[in-house]
Amino acid sequence: MARLSADEVRQYESEGWVIPQFRLPPARVASMRAALDALIADNPGVRPEKLVSAHIEGDNGEGVKGSAQFLELARDPEIVELVSGVIGEDVILWGCHVFCKPPAEGFETPWHQDGHYWPIRPLANCTVWVALEESTTENGCLRVIPRSHVGQVLHPHLHEHRTDLTLNQRMADGTFDEAQAVDLELQPGQMSLHDVYMIHGAAANTSAKRRTGVALRYMPATSVFERDLRPSDGKTGVAVNFAQRPLWLLRGVDRSGRNDFQVGHRARG
Ligand SMILES: O=C(O)CCC(=O)C(=O)O
Image: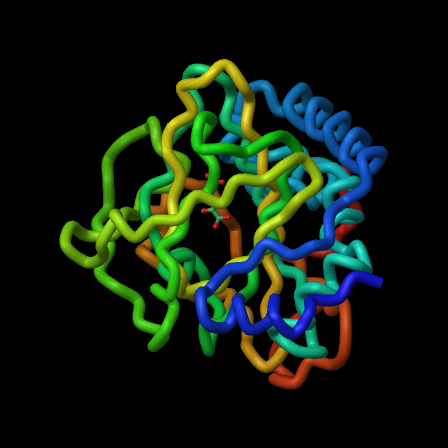
């Protein structure tokens, strides 16, 4: 069973991110890459950076036709074990976004904090970003500002009216020092974990190599998924439907007593 070492937990807590020793075996990466190709083929009208809720099979109500293989990945007991090392024993899966940046013209991800985008209160979340392909400085890997999560402050963001970005909320100028950025280079099957307050982004992919990460989102069940909130007035650049988003309690109990695990779990075509 995968488990974060004490050093890995310390790294996550102090820096806001960690790349664990654990990685997916090559056969699993190959099958997920086939699932990715099928997902892209099933969604010809959707930019591959915007495959939101890819884990919800069939028409997911958010403009994407999702696939059970991404749900299976999100429920993988080894990944959930890693997550519980940093958010505790009560783990809710609430999101999965495939960020696939095609060669030559892959969209930039502006510097941002995830907390501006999500209706979780109190705000808490661990994202596991699973590399299905090599993700390097050359093809626009995830970049982070270490320790930017400390103090749990959400800094001002500006809305950008652009169609060539994965997301539309960008950290306002002067709110952080880009020179501090660390590139999280990953091989296929490796993954990084990051905190909801950490500042991160990714450059456009202008290289000849596709770059794909599956971002799996987990919140502790001490928090509530507040379905009626519309963070950033819904101007985030991705079509989301939090009112109908299904939640899965993967471990432990719903400590908040207020999360709804029935909504959105309909039969899908
Ligand atoms: O993969 C990317 O370009 C962005 C990912 C991201 O912002 C996230 O997972 O929170």
